Length: 496
Image 1 (cartoon, rainbow, N blue to C red):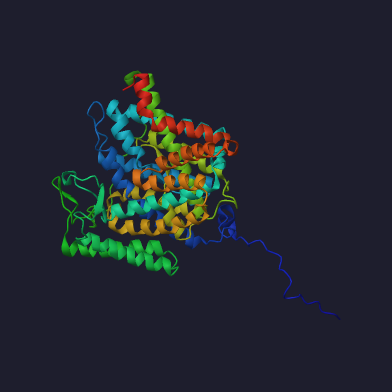
Image 2 (cartoon, helix red, strand yellow):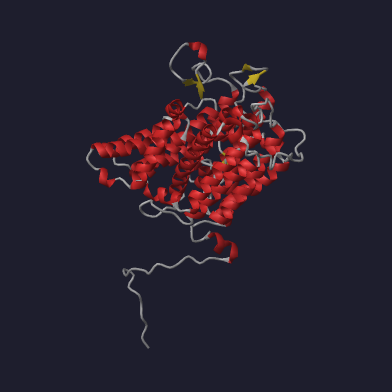
């Protein structure tokens, strides 16, 4: 009888991971190196870092009057914001099967509130948002949006991911109160400063620093769900500090309180549960073209489309690279067409729900940092938003000083993509640098991407390498030239 033994030095054939159960197979949890527990915890982390939108969006579009002086109201906007985020995030998880959460887009909502609704009724403004979402959806169905994703050079994709890291870190620092706008009365051209007066003071700042230290240590030691634990610990500290020191909100009776909480005051609300007000759902009109004129309405829609198209494109690139979902050269990812389709539908849903255009959220990076790799993460986040429909008051318990540290740490994780950029080639270095820096400096992912595309094309042409430019990049660069020069377009066309 002979016994065959395997040479220990011989290569071992790779084996496919064994998947267990329908849930595992559907979301490919084991295949992507994750577990159900890790996915759920990651979903909680994502929710914790972006739940502020249920509070912040109502403060932006719920308090801005339209051309007739009408308001949407804070409570109704809170309800539809949570509803749209819940439904579209769950849809992203089930259809796209990626750990990307969806909610009302910041920046876009401000544009809708102050540049669109100010010229028409709120129903007409939301009608333009619906049209924008339908255009985005058509661009996805025709394959155009996916083609643009694939046409972006790998170096620019790395710059977009790194730039988003800087952007969300900046958001975290601002939300935490460490970076603040310089008072206009200071008479200086410096736009921001350290703290309220160039120094760090106030108990909320201490809470932020404690959260930054705790979260940083947890992540550095590779503690599972470290970002979520950091948020929870910091929130508990914030509640205790608020009960003891009572620093109050950042603004009291319209006057600044430099040592107060930046957004949410961490106190237990009363009541904890309230029925959602959803009467704004379906409050849409397509009369804007008659109200403000065809050209004005078209320019507003063009601006919304371009901002949404590339904001999402950049966010998708950054999140996919962070989650390790892209292929070797970063040109593709699983179910990209489905991910982009859900995002397009989300824009339509946001307009139809009067919550403003909904989009993929960069804060999803916090859940990814905690191990989220599949759509189950998004489903968990979406279910929590459903709960927020009834627990909208409780969402305000987490102050920005507790969520901000998570964004800073996640930003530090994302900036590591910079190592993929060849800074010895100025044709790469300059567009990459503009992409990364203009995102935080202009507070816009879209602006950073636009500057990167335009400068990439311009420098490659100047280098005599025009043939290396993908045809779609030419079209996108031209579109961004129009985007940046929209005021000149208005002046030429006579549109106000």
